[in-house]
Amino acid sequence: MTVFKAYDVRAVYPEPLCEETARKIGLATGRLMLVESDGPTTVVVGHDMRLSSPALVKALKDGLLEVGCDIIDVGLVDTPFIAFAVNHLNAIGGIQTTASHNPAQYNGFKICRAKAKPVGMGTGLEKIQAMAEDIDEPTIATDRGSEKSMDLWDAYREHVFTYLDPKIQSGEITIRAAVDASNGMAGTMVPKLFRDVKGLELVEINFENDKGTFVHEPNPLVDANLQQTIDAVKEHNCHLGICFDGDADRCMVVDEKGSIVGCDLITAWLAPKFLANEEAGSIVYDLRSSHAVAKSIESVGGSSVRSRVGHVFMKQAMAEHDASFGGELSGHFYFRDNFYADSGAMAFAAVVSALANSDASMSEQIVPHQQFSQSGEINFEAEDKDASMAMLVAAYPDATVDRLDGVTVDCGDWWCNVRASNTEPLLRLNLEAASPEAVTTHVAEVSPLLGIRVDH
Image 1 (cartoon, one colour):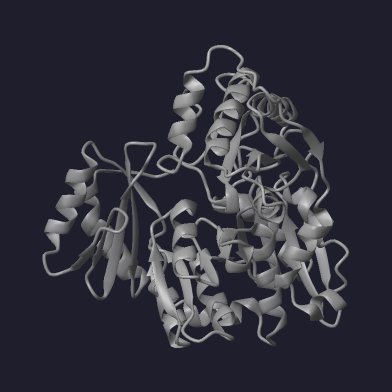
Image 2: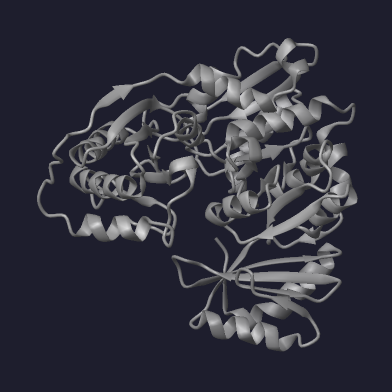
């Protein structure tokens, strides 16, 4: 089935992702979860706002029920809600019907096991794919599962608010924030959690999410998609702006001047606050991040943990090191008290809380971490990706090299990481140096080794 990707199920609806395929995925996922369970049979199911989601989640549930799973349907929710619900209800797993930041014609499923452990290729999704592709006829369990609906928003709110400063909750301090929901699930989540908070003044953008359309692509990593947030911050004199992706598990931050703040710099800024009450605590960050992140962590006695890119690896590193916080360049932020999982809602709460506890503006607080210049991610078409990375290593024999994820070449005054795309014939370059001029020089230097540059 072409609907299975590296980390989830995602494809265009209704072809190739149709109701029958959704039913088979429900059957296969249910079988896997029941085999791994010691007795409990409950699976949490939710869905996003896409027009195809109700039909797909119904078919998915039919498959789960056929194989004997009991379902708790938590309804229209953001993706991190599922991780919370699985743990809150001690379920054997959870499935969110969503296509995250993809265009409106897409949909899919994000799957997790008990304790909200992610399921991707190599961690169970390949087994689900094999079983789903082998199913021809309906398979009815001896005891068909049961289904009930449950409203957990009050419990979810209490959970998320462990990261929201009490002074904001009481109105002692007021933060004005422009929030772009991107016509996605933040348009449901933010009103339910944050709209009535006394110390939050929200400038709401693109909160309508029942039409099946997006004013802009629900992907905050694309700078153009942040323009409405930037404009609103300036127009309404906001302290900051936040733009969520389609399923509200990721967000990007804009400072009070309307400048986009890199997620690695957000990690560097927040890390000392999470380490303030810990002795030698750990913070996890993805290896593409600025060296400013490790410097910030280590400046307060913390342990900096580099991770491979991707939520599966970040969550694993978070759990292994019992890290209180973690951040990825993609806008995923992870929290120990959220079962080491990511949460857009908690990231929003943490950012406004950190801002509330300083007299300095966001831009002033970020400046100390802007020690280096970065290239941003640059893509290259490469016929032989392994050979290109080998050429890069060979070109710098005196560099420090590691292969945690792709290849990282550190020459002291500059460094770069090159990773192969899982889905395209591309290499992805991230490079950091002391100045913009040095970045330009070294990008020009390594580019011929990597292939044909693709600007998109």
